[in-house]
Image 1 (cartoon, one colour):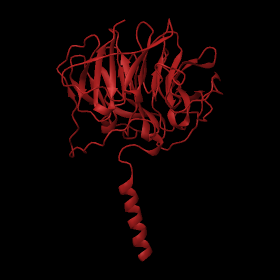
Image 2 (cartoon, rainbow, N blue to C red):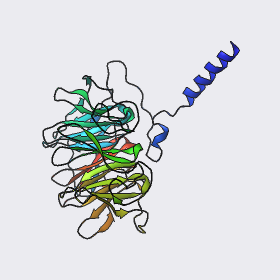
Image 3 (tube, helix red, strand yellow):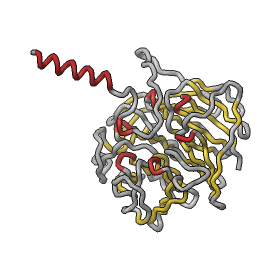
Image 4 (cartoon, one colour):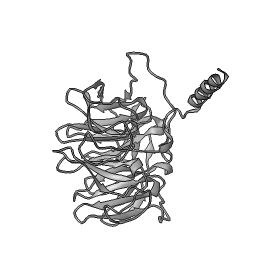
Length: 349
């Protein structure tokens, strides 16, 4: 009996000392304090501001009241999708400012949202979510219900049919022109692809070992890849977070290169970049997360520069930015998990 009491006491102590928000495998990414659980039947309510004007170089708070938001996406109508990670919610902000929750009902099969870190929206309005701590990819249907796309809640690595495939804490998502979904399988150090028609899952790049290696897609190495973005030519760019760089996957030539090596940058060294997004001109914006800044990489000239923002009165400074997206008018949206908000700024073209 004494041994049983000691065991139960030790188990309770372990539970009490458990990190409140993210698992140990999430080292290197910004954390936020846990938020209080809502009362039964209630849902945490983000606060959309009254459609504030987005101005040149003035960084405004567009949505507040979130909990560590990590990912953003836009649809064809200009609605903004937010992975409200700490609240385990996907939010949609209409262009006029109205907010709604998505994926609140469960389809079959599906898993409850658990720290979602990625969103991608098709031209038809399908919403894919990286259900990160459930190790799977899910889709939010037109009826608002959540349905499993690929993977299982058990972390592993396996290609093949969607129901047999396995991921390990997937984060970034991106769609190609044919509707195929690309996944940053972060803790497997690989880039995966889900076929738009067959839902077959395959590995596009990475041998699974953490490291830094260019060359052939399959033999290349990454270290906790996060954000993904396609350029206009169909090349896939990857925020290779723990390597402090941005990688380029030429899917036609089958090669991986490193156009932005943050370790060799004297003026703008990168520190755990998490999110990336292209503007209409083809320049790449980078969330230089642990440096608390946004960088712009001009593709034509190869020049890397830091964006200097002004702030509206009373707004807190930019924390450690994560997800990015840019609309057709040149407005950059930034997920700021440290400040629990979404910011916006007009970066022009």
